[in-house]
Length: 116
Image (cartoon, rainbow, N blue to C red; front, side, top):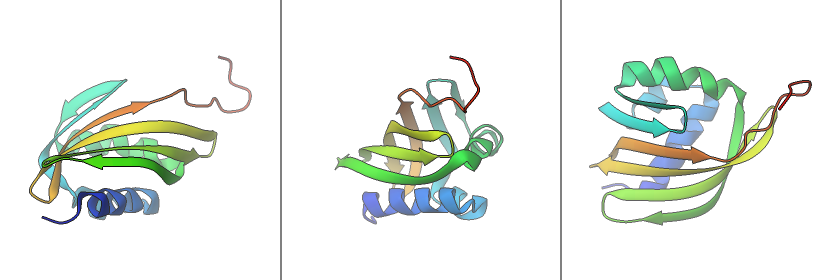
């Protein structure tokens, strides 16, 4: 199997480039995703619910990375138009493809003028 860190970094680079086809190439068709605001399975729902959120992201700074046989965990700072915020993701792998993503994030900065 390929190095999990390289797979995850390539997945995120494709996300930042806004290359949907390349991003999806790292994911299993029955991908399971859970976040603080959503939970679903399948690439169609990934494209509908997650892909539009990526427009605001400009980059990632990886802080910590750990892996086991079929999982990888990392924390990173997401660079966004409204400010940076800390995230943590747990990836589950099936071979060299991502089969599940469990994502957590801290407080996402508000756009100027938005109330808290």
